[in-house]
Image (cartoon, rainbow, N blue to C red):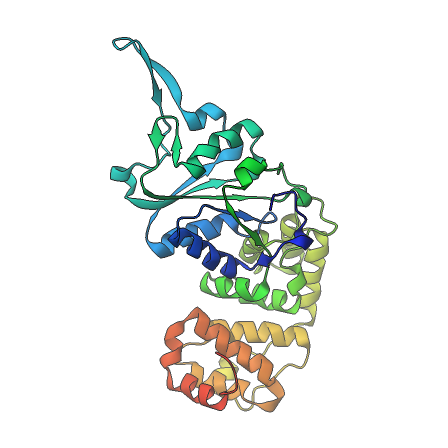
Length: 342
């Protein structure tokens, strides 16, 4: 299936699903291409897979190159009266980079046809010119889709047929796990739980600033600003529409003090507005530790908190910190929620 196929006609995967499918192809030495809109995390999938497997990683940004950057530059050997091809430093070297790794051709869809032709033999034969990839190095690629109005061009069928193709989609639950592990502002996690359709949206986008997992990561760095400056900063990162939604969220959110929850979990008020519930659940999941878990559990077990939000708090906290599963409070919660598939 080529890049020209429309999104509605292909099976899409979340970031987590895409990484696990790519892992299968890596284990079976099948070159893999990840397609997706800008900002979804295509490059991160390739880096994470290499890190998790403990192998080397080389990132080649094909869209910025000339053919000779890949094939090498001919330098005359006057004694032998031959041309010697000098290859670029980024090609894997077994002694320097290890015997196993991933070589990622990023932004491949931005490359013109003459550059794509240079990739043919690397993907199929693991060779370009006289250079051969070390046997344990695996080719992978990623690129934007043409329908997202990026710089993407069509991929030739000759090159496309050399890959297994994975099509990426945004998914809040998958992103939330990553966000909680990378210290993304819990208020932002709560906001996107309240408005998950804004995790990635190019509808009405000006093609400069629009919501995406990549741009929301940057928004997290300015979420603590005062309202006026925050709205200006968020607008610059994700566009005006999403920034207005953020400020509307802040206007209705009313959270109890965390210290009050810990000191008096059975008496501290529980907000009723949905936006506040999402923000509160996110905050509690982030602040749950072995020490605070008992009080938080008492608080979220109250009927007015709601079992669905309580489940979110516990599952998000334990996915962020799996060691919480060994705490007695979690074991008590698990016994009381045997019907859930954990």
